[in-house]
Amino acid sequence: MRKLIKFQNKNISFVSHGAVGGFEEAAGPLGENFDLVDKTDLFGMKSYEMAEGEMGRLCVNIAMTKAGFKPTDIDCIFAGDLQNQCFASSSGLYSFGIPYIGLYSACSTMTEALLLGASLIDGGHIKCACALSTSHNSAAERQFRTPLEYGGQRQPYAQWTATAAGAFILDGEGQGRVRIKDGMIGKIVDGLTTDAANMGAAMARSAMDTIYTYFSLSDISPTQVDLIVTGDLGYVGSEMLRDMLGEQFPALVGRHIDCGTLLYDRSKKDVHAGASGCGCSASVLSLKFIPQLERGELKNILFMSTGALMNPTGVLQKNNILGITPLVRLSSE
Image (cartoon, rainbow, N blue to C red):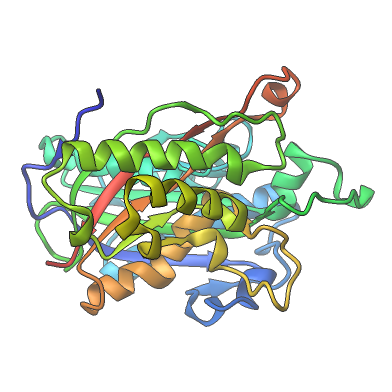
């Protein structure tokens, strides 16, 4: 059984945060909340792959500027993306000279980064951490699916990879109102599908596994949680999760919300089943949920970025797609 990580340091908090987005994201319901958008999706670079790295650099710089920090004030940065070997993260962040741990946990990378950063702060190994995750629609499409110029038709249950990034600075001195109270490392769960386009279905079972395990181990009851925020199940995966919650935790059905359903206006843009990508949950956390917690509109949320553990090589093996869902509980109490 997985162990619930209860942080002994009660002052691990969000010092600052930032979000960067592209053209489609700027036109969405949360568009005006981005700190920076580039409607060309290139961010001054010559390729979409390099643009994703620049998004990460800009996002971290925004978060540092808000906090009045310099790169030397951050002990370690935890970052990841969807490009092979986390190319976007390393290429974008090297100029800061901050000690770096590259992460790949698919679209669950942001929660993993927050959990690891908080853990090292709690253990007294570092004082300040930065968590970052990015995704770029055009870079991901070229790597995972088909050339953009091909114009292949997408399945109705497929999702749109977000061109977005989110960065968060954490410390252990309680400078921010929003605290990380506890968390849980994700477990690899069989998604019971081989369809790489149906990521929502592949991740829904891992999300339910994490929710069930968390409430089995925690002294927090479902009624004490304002929201269960998943990463990017989209409309298809969210419906599946709500069905499963209805069997185990009926009180939570109306408290579930998914970042993949919030980033775009489905009535104006055909994004099929919603948003996905490492930058989806990261940006929505910065754009919507941290501000709501800071204002006291929310008191306790479970933030659970969901990931489909696949790559172009893995899809060719014809095995079931695996899902993973780490968790952190964020509180303004």
